[in-house]
Image (cartoon, rainbow, N blue to C red; front, side):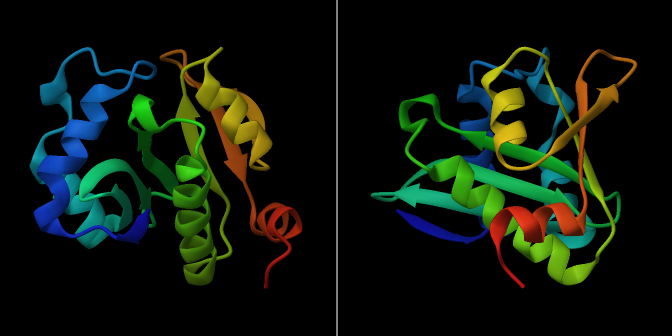
Length: 149
């Protein structure tokens, strides 16, 4: 497995992974165009990818300006192999090196993602008007959970 910072040339492969997931699916794939992904990984924040034998199997994107996790997806064929956990760690370590501000995310309720974030130290703080569960993570919660810094 190779984990590295996402580049603009990775967007097509990232989008393929995004459309493979079975949970938190997009009702319309056109809702997240390539230009938006480019904006998030080059201006608003940063992204990471995981490759296995040259195949993209996961990616994550954090929005530093908006203080939220914008994406974390793993190809279902590669689920439960630690890929999501490592992409999450890379993303959150980088985020908290840039700022100590809390970060939020939303995910569909009653999904594996909801459990995943709880296990990574996130706190459920309610729900968004469109039905997603809202989580937040602060700097102290991250360093306590990860034992770093």
